[in-house]
Length: 269
Image 1 (cartoon, rainbow, N blue to C red):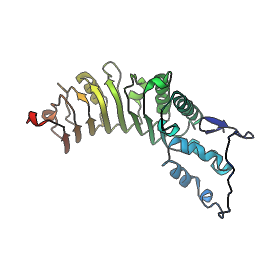
Image 2: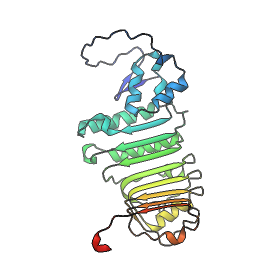
Image 3: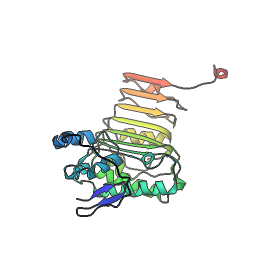
Image 4: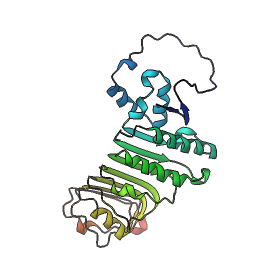
């Protein structure tokens, strides 16, 4: 199986040419970590971000294929450069695309997390790449999927995301309008939905709620939420943080935990 290291394939029999400073390595005793069973090593790798996971494949043959079975994937473009540039953005795009295409297609994911910081103008076709990554991630039947963007990306999420029958938790922080008014939404196992920095119309949120029969927890933060004629009758946990156009209390008849927080000016009192 091919191994990815920072966006470069390392195939069996081939060595990646990397410039490294010579270092003196002292003998530290037997490698006890590599003696652990696969299930424990994969659990350790699950706590790392995707680039760090990929880098472990060059440690030894013992680690060569473990990365492709990790159930938790966290892609973060900040790992490729502290200062975002066109070059670092392109490296990030190539890395994620290569990683997902080479990932074990029989592996089901517990978590898929995509974090993008900075501005989209640094990278050509980044929105199309993100759509492809999400589409690919859905094929791995994730239980939790999180998208965290620190800038406004005019992204139309793929329709396959809204009919993913494995999702139990979905978190979207996208900084733009979320419009699923005319999309088919059916997430039969979704229990937790977290929305941040979004404009959400009444028909949109109604379509989401109707397509999530198991939804118990809804968290909305720093968003414009239009809730006219929307029923939250089945909601057990409702969190509204710094949201405008808030008029949902009359429809929260079964809520067990209610959190409402909003900033204000003294002149509003």
